[in-house]
Image (cartoon, rainbow, N blue to C red; front, side):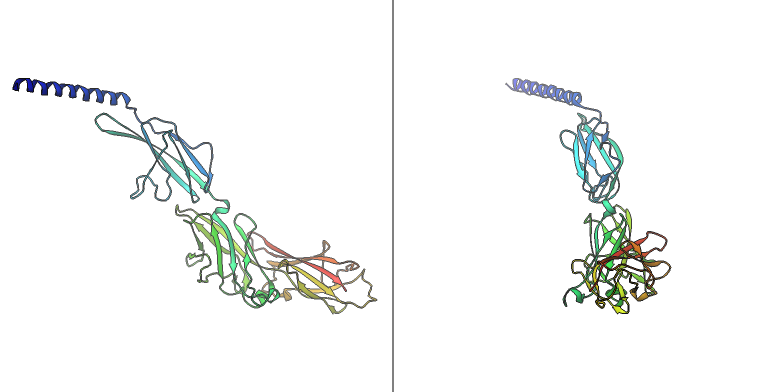
Length: 356
């Protein structure tokens, strides 16, 4: 009986051993030598939040991708890779502009438990429209009586180019020195991971949108000067912008035959005015010579680099020289230009001038 029992144990062991050998052989037959190769299509670059489709072009049993952005950098402590779909694809959208080193890892396991891997990588260029700055404005600069006793003016920046921004300011904010002091800013970025810095010779100042910390000035030595700001991504990419506060050009004196005109701001826009000159009824209107000044000829606003042009119905005007036909209302356009040798900034105002 004891001998029969030992024979039974031997037989069971033999069967299990043969089964294990067959299983190992099966695993060995299923083993695929890993070869990491992947593609992301033919794009030279991708926009922020645009889907990047990683596709397996190699071989292996499992595939993992490290996109290379925040918390997904290959071989960096506390960073992790992302498992691909069963079909060997993976979709991902980057939140910031930058150049990322994407790493693709293919792995296979042998019957003895050994993990074999292969690695492929490529650079992925991610860009943001405008470089990452979506909007910019100068907030609550000062009250504007034209629009009510409680109205605070806010200058909404206009992107003249991808990197040059104009923030228009009414002339009364210049004369009240509201522009010539520190003011707050408001902005939005394409990524909540990026930050905005104000560039200074003594170092960068990090900005918070609508922060109570006021750090911006737009003048130097009482003259308007562009300011440099930069969007900085966590990937280390820095995109520079230039912001220019532009005083909206405005007649500070306009008269015909010694009679001063009365101007009112068009409440539909800050750079539109109506101007009425009340002349005697027998005045001949087809040949009048206006006298005018812009910005009170302030030398801090008007110099060799900061100029104003005045046109009436498309014709360039010179104060107390150019003859104008006022039989009908005349459209005046005042254009203020700041040319400091870089980007040429300009801003225009329109006047509807009427003889009453």
